[in-house]
Amino acid sequence: MGSYLVFALEASRAPRWIEQPDWERQYRNGRLRLIVTCEKTGYRPWHIPWESAIPID
Image 1 (cartoon, one colour):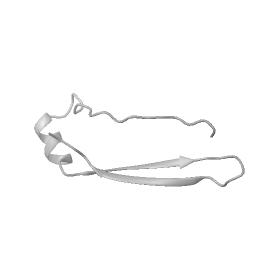
Image 2 (cartoon, helix red, strand yellow):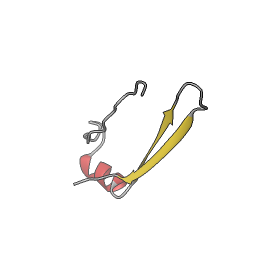
Image 3 (cartoon, one colour):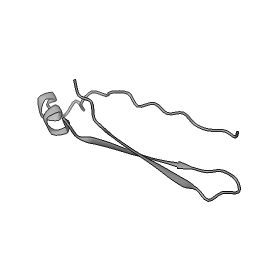
Image 4 (spheres, rainbow, N blue to C red):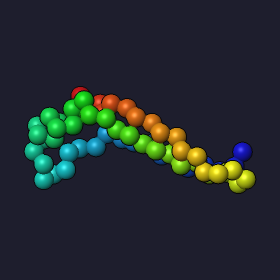
């Protein structure tokens, strides 16, 4: 069925130049949007959008 790439998102720490409480406060309940572009020979490229809440424990 052709080839594909697999990606995974992992939780990351706040950048070291940002104070952790400020980082969490700013992005808590934020949204993450990814857009996947698919390509297949013989077809026009198509896009699959995905949006989810940013989980901050």
